[in-house]
Image 1 (spheres, rainbow, N blue to C red):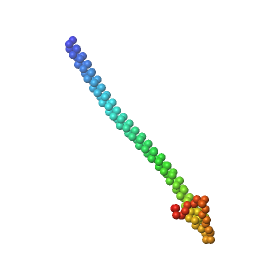
Image 2: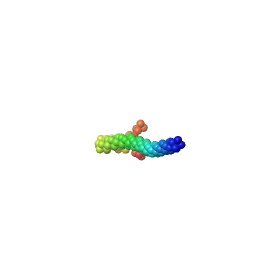
Image 3: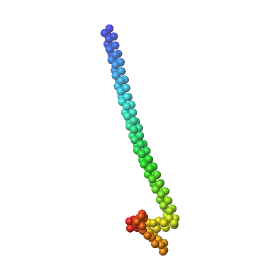
Image 4: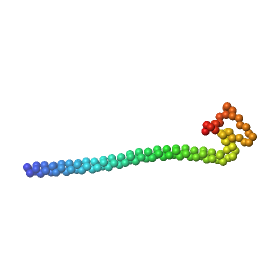
Amino acid sequence: MNNTKKHSTTATEKISNIRTARLHRFYIIMGIFIVFVGIFSFQLIHTHYQRSAVDQQIQTSKKSYASAKSQNETLNTQVKQLNNDNYLQKLLREKYYYSKAGEIIYSLPSDHSSDVSQN
């Protein structure tokens, strides 16, 4: 009987050793899994923030492009107007008080055109 008790205690010790070894393996595997999940989560979050920053830069660039495009259209319109002789003569008369031969220009107080010396 004493032999049976020794045999059963060694069997229970082996079983408990196997259980603790399995438990340690489980903790190691779970630790490795948690580390990988942490790394992948960090990369996902980092990628999300980078994408947000790039999206914001795209929006800023689109606004800048739209303003540059409208300014370009305005400048093209001005170039077309400056190529028109009638507009150019009108501009010279208003801004620089240019006159035709025999023409007299009177400056009135209500005249809002800028003086040549102010430019």
